[in-house]
Each structure stands twice: as C-alpha cells, then as structure tokens.
Amino acid sequence: MRYEISDPHLTRALTALVDVTLAVDENAPCMDPACSVKGCCTAEVSA
Image 1: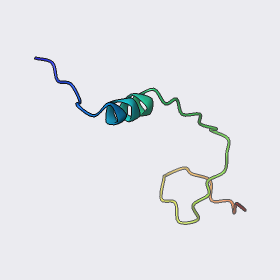
Image 2 (image 1 turned 60 degrees about the vertical axis):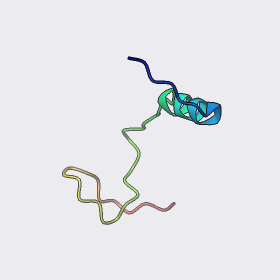
Image 3 (image 1 turned 30 degrees about the horizontal axis):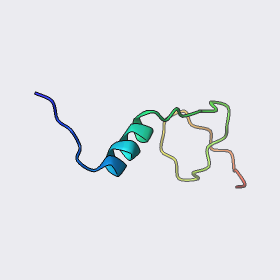
C-alpha cells in the first residue's frame, strides 16, 4: 500500500527536512553551562 500527501507544500517541506545534512564540529566547546552529558567540556563559552 502506498500513501501520498495531498498538500504539495507539506510534501516539499518534509522532503527538504529528510534531505538535510548536519555538520558537527566535535572540537567545538559546549555552550550549555548546565550540560549533564558525561565527558562534556565544562569550560566557559562566550556566544
């Protein structure tokens, strides 16, 4: 069975969302002073 979205604007927006590629800088300092991620840098960051 195949489903089709009836609103072409929604179809285009969902396709664009799926096609997004995120770039991550692993060396960037954490910007959240309350970050609870184990091993995350706690250095102060100015945004």
